[in-house]
Amino acid sequence: MQTLEHDDYLALRAGAQVLERDRHGDKVLQLTDGSYLKLFRRKRLLSSTAWYPYAQRFADNAQVLAERNIPCPYVIGLYRIPGARRDAVHYHPLAGRTLRELIRADADIMGTAGMREQLGRFVAGLHEAGIYFRSLHLGNIVLTPEGELGLIDIADLRAGRRPLPPHRRRRNLQHLLRDEADRAWLHAGGDPAFDAAYQRRALERAQQ
Ligand SMILES: Nc1ncnc2c1ncn2[C@@H]1O[C@H](COP(=O)(O)OP(=O)(O)O)[C@@H](O)[C@H]1O
Ligand SMILES: [Mg+2]
Image 1 (cartoon, helix red, strand yellow):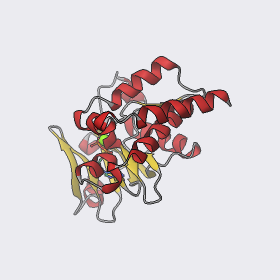
Image 2 (cartoon, protein in one colour; image 1 turned 135 degrees about the vertical axis):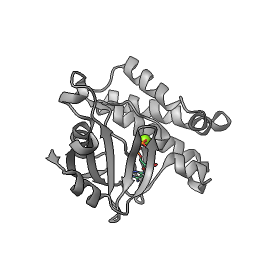
Image 3 (tube, helix red, strand yellow; image 1 turned 180 degrees about the vertical axis):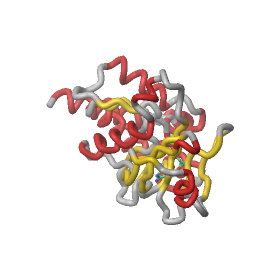
Image 4 (tube, protein in one colour; image 1 turned 90 degrees about the vertical axis):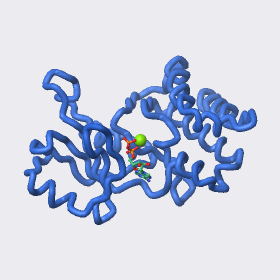
């Protein structure tokens, strides 16, 4: 992690577009070169984020996902910014758009059972690969121009060596159903494609 003086931080973010902010301030910036800077507040000294900062977790997780061939952002820098009491991870966004954006834009591809099927296979693949992604929802899954699915917002993820046990799978799948619009799309008109594809893939892997 590289320490950024406040002036260097201001220079880096000059002209940036703020993509996300909350009551504490800016959260995600798009810099003028198209790269992203995601900011994390430094927490109390005694919390786990002090010894394993979120920006570092993001970078480590990007490496794990890349090793397992799961598309995700490409990290180019990690900064500590004492002047702003923030850490930051600097990355190239994963090419594509989030499934949530595509649903809102009423994209044709989201109207098909094929997309639900692809998502079911994808999530089953994560679970088989031992990945428990706490922020699993359609706003954090991107459809790439190559037609593959990938993950963004990856600070909060656990990657084990073994496939997830059933209770963790169920709990993780529930994360996908929290958002009402996500849920409506997943099970549109009683479409079983997502669940069926998830189960089929999980079963195939278990038999191998
Ligand atoms: N392909 C992409 N790669 C990275 N971020 C993207 C991409 N497409 C859209 N975004 C947007 O980037 C912003 C930051 O996303 P994210 O990392 O999920 O942060 P958060 O959910 O904490 O605001 C969101 O507005 C998200 O929709
Ligand atoms: Mg997100």
